[in-house]
Image (cartoon, rainbow, N blue to C red):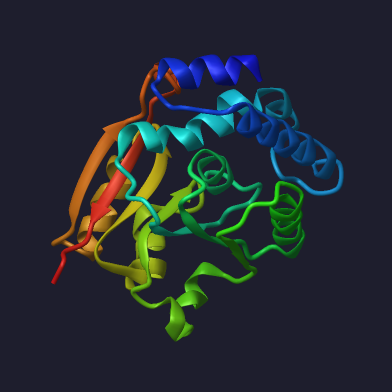
Length: 217
């Protein structure tokens, strides 16, 4: 955890001793549950900070996430990116969407064991969310990391975002074809791409954010 503190400090992201302890509990829970269900690959168990936690937190170095924002995290899995962000930013409100029952149960245990408020779990397929009227135009941000292609996720959740809100996708490698498919389906979208901060994510891994900004009208 010393490594995590040093890296975040160098990236101008504040972290307290209590938050460091929360991250340690979180990592321990992942490793324990990983024996029962596939939360992360076995190879990544030893690289949770580098491959998952820092990559999740990198959004806070790239964007000014407004205080008390309502955020929906699509395909949360082991809790990335939502749980690390929530540990650092306890003012934010999250709905974690995970369709697999065991992973949803894991997320509920994380919330209970880490005593995280402002976090709810929806054990539901993302494409079914728009059938729940209370979710429509309710979120300032949508986050999604390594779930599906851009055009597919946008089709699932675009109606859940408030006017003027943003969809942020964690992506790696060449995404030219994904961008083209998205614009073919929705040609008037405003799309911005930003590389992840090299102080947090190794530049050679070519990790980036794709932001879709909705209009306020």
